[in-house]
Image 1 (spheres, rainbow, N blue to C red):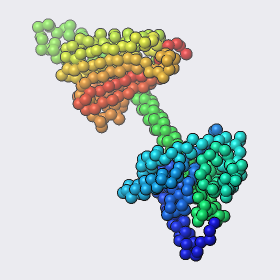
Image 2: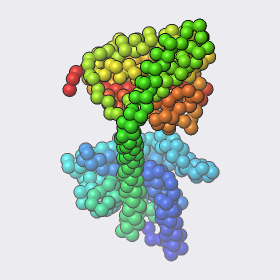
Image 3: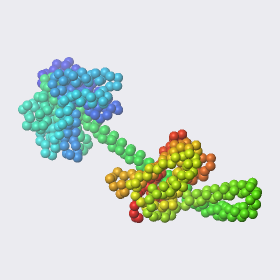
Image 4: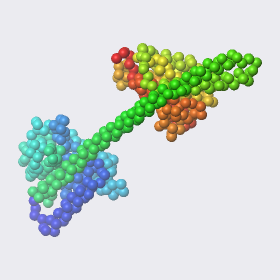
Length: 474
């Protein structure tokens, strides 16, 4: 290497210190790993930095035990060098800085980078550098690549175009993350022991960027896991609270049944006897008795709904076809729908099998959902019913779920009410007990299923009942 005068040496040292300062500063920015590594390699090759002709980055693949080319910065020829550096300078002048998309676009135009990314060699079977750098974990300078090619892996030697090449290990605490290689054209850009130590600093910076990236991804995974566990805990807590409410309501239900149900039965019997005693000519009195009888019946139904919700149901399981149950419920409500100007259409999937379920309770669930839909369309509308199977496999029965979707174009549900739809006694209707969806949710849960509701005020509601498609008794 030609001896530099003191001024030139100071200027060179100043450029290199400024480059190291800039690199360290950029590593503190929110740039992603690829951008940071690209900037590190670029600073080694730009004319106003270290001025080396090419820089390589190769990373170890632990699963394959290979060393693989990951990034190459530098030209294949002199004309290309000027084009690349002009492109880098133009990017740096932009207000947004050299963003990832721009950097990626620039690299796509660099044939050298493409060649480096195709490099791959097995560490255990490889010989020469850069493989030896992974094994020895030490930097190595080959001062004349033309005479020292016996020490360089043949595939890597085919990429070299400069006399000198240095190999720097990217070291973590317990392993080698990869290798950085730098070509020097010689002359005042030659690599000596001092510059090899400086390159080792660059290698440490690259290793820090890689290690931080791995830590960040590990942290992201752990945060995602914690968020998932937190959601599961919240759901479990909500279910426990729901079960606590059920238990409390179950204790109250015994008193309710004794204090209300028995007097209601007595009232119903006496009303029936009273109607027989009242002359048929007294139409006004008959009308009043009918009103009292109707309200007593409604109160009785409310008590029964309360009892049905608060007690853990004992399912009477049998093999039945959910499509046929839905058809029966549609038949029950068809007249009411026509009377209100509601068109009910069914698209029942023929692939749905017979399933093990409690037919009576599933009929109640389907009925409650459809009555809610009809009540949400007092001025008419449409109710479409669709059934099917959800499965990721070709086998529609094994390990999959049956679903029944009920879609209406009624009044919809206000957003602020969505979180309370399954709360007992919560209702948005003037007349209603607020038990319908609570009972549906309870029935589906005891079948191992779920209820999903999508709605928006004025845009209708879609209720989907989903449950495992059990075709045999377990």
